[in-house]
Image (cartoon, rainbow, N blue to C red; front, top):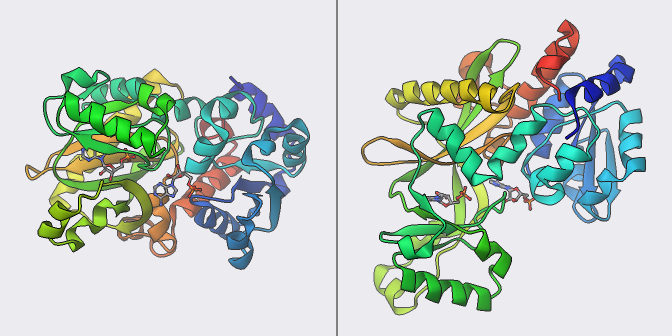
Length: 361
Ligand code: AMP
Ligand code: AMP
């Protein structure tokens, strides 16, 4: 594990007037880079060959580095180059999906905004569960053993896989039948299946709550809410029931985009209390705890209960609808405060006040 002291030493060597906010060109990079620019930082995007078009066309960064593969960013010459450019890195879902938590922990020798140690919690379901349950956040029942399936359940795979390959089952027999089919269709691998988690299916609506914990202010801010737009499950209602029955279509949960949500105002109290407890517990389990952006992924039931099925310990793409600010960020900051920009504001303040230690690991 790269230690914070080492990172802070690196930062000491940096030219403070030329700090560059860097991220992978993917996921939520557009608002991260735009926000950093607005706060006066230089910006840099690392793109996989073929994906640079988006960042070029939006003039998203001062500099774009194109690599054959995202993992090449870990090569020592590359890391050195980024250090020479005074890069501070913002982690997001694609960094986790394509570079991987272990490499971020052990190889990415760059100052990272947020807590390097807590990224692993979103990839490790049992650690995540201990954390959320200790924070008194309700979660769906879960098992690894398909013989225990006795109600409608969702079969999920680890990591930021974006709903790929998920399927629904309500008995052991159905699990065997469907997993065989999914393997045959190559929608999942044997390896995925070994790591599968079977979760009680929560009937309700999905609400993804994006928070920002400011270590400088010691306060959790509510930054936005979204729901995911997933193919093909979100299109199912467009097919008449009779046709659904006649031509059975396997539901899938692959994320295509995100749509903004505003919750009933009476739900917001619980939203804040959950956010506060999550941060409080995080300080104990992975000091210095949750820093900056995170997201609680919930289903809300007809009893108006939040049941969380996951936590993301960094910016989520569900903040992308709010490049110009969300209905919630507006209340605290007025217009034009995206999550990306909020991250840059915290960085700027930390650097100015000499409190890097509170934000960067
Ligand atoms: P991509 O670069 O789009 O292939 O996505 C990288 C990772 O981030 C994948 O694991 C995706 O599932 C996840 N991801 C990308 N965009 C979104 C989104 N809009 N909402 C939720 N997850 C996303
Ligand atoms: P995830 O990849 O965990 O973010 O979940 C992808 C999709 O599956 C989301 O749209 C969720 O609404 C849905 N989902 C995940 N877990 C559950 C659950 N336990 N009950 C109902 N829906 C779920």
